[in-house]
Length: 367
Image 1 (spheres, one colour):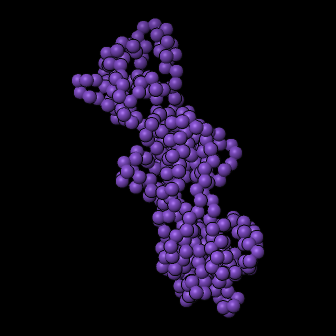
Image 2: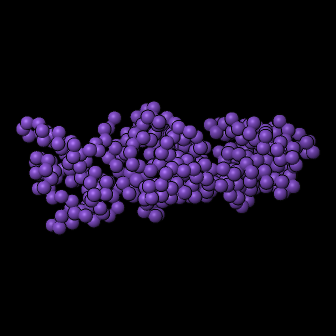
Image 3: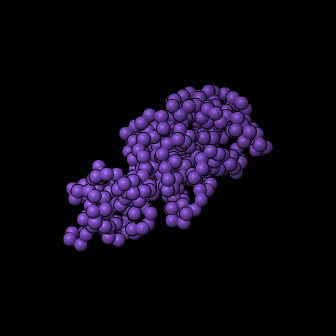
């Protein structure tokens, strides 16, 4: 694990107490100058101590000091203005560089539509807006992937202004990624205890909006296609809406890892006489939308005349659909912006972590 040096004056005193010339490494010079910048003692545009002064202070060779300066220029902390000298960069990385952390590999992110939408919006923000932001994949605190090792080093070397976790970082509780000092952090998760120093951003309101849309459209016999683990929550939600009816056989769950099963679920759902069928369907996960709507198309269901479909999505990255649906979901652009704004608030205003919320929005029909 990388050790972060914070008390550089103490380090120097200990070194000078030793007899003879201490074995100074360029890392010590790097960390000293970096700390001057991060602590605010040197501000953007300020000149840094000359190489001669640093060499004398550390009793180091000019080659060692030059190597340290070159590393800090490459990291974005310093820039060189020819013969004028070396200065602190106007936007050093600890004030301008952000990380988005995914708990799975890039290939696995492709299978989760929210994570994919967040990664795509991150890439757009970097390419179209010039935001210094990067996605780190396969960071779960259990296996040291190349991205996780890079992220740990970025935290240790203070090369980040903030971190956005795409899910609850429960496997990172003992990692410097979550515990490293002086970095703002936001996690997209249901609020939970045990995460000090972490703002939590919750996306909520889909269930309420989907049920309200059914009621407003006059649908009363409502089926639900969800992912495993939330069946009871949806059953309670429909039951509490006194004007709605849902038979237990109309509540089906399909895993995100096997979305094609949703197609056959729709066959079974509609394989009854028309008066016994539901007249509304809520699809709670956009990973299931394509297969479910294909099954309904194959069965010849007339949408929305016979069946109104309200489907979850992550705007603006809508899944493919084979029949018309009404979209209710969350805007990945808004999620990313809300997280970035809170990171900025934490860093610039010394704001305490807080709970954030992004509400569901409705979109147009799509066929």
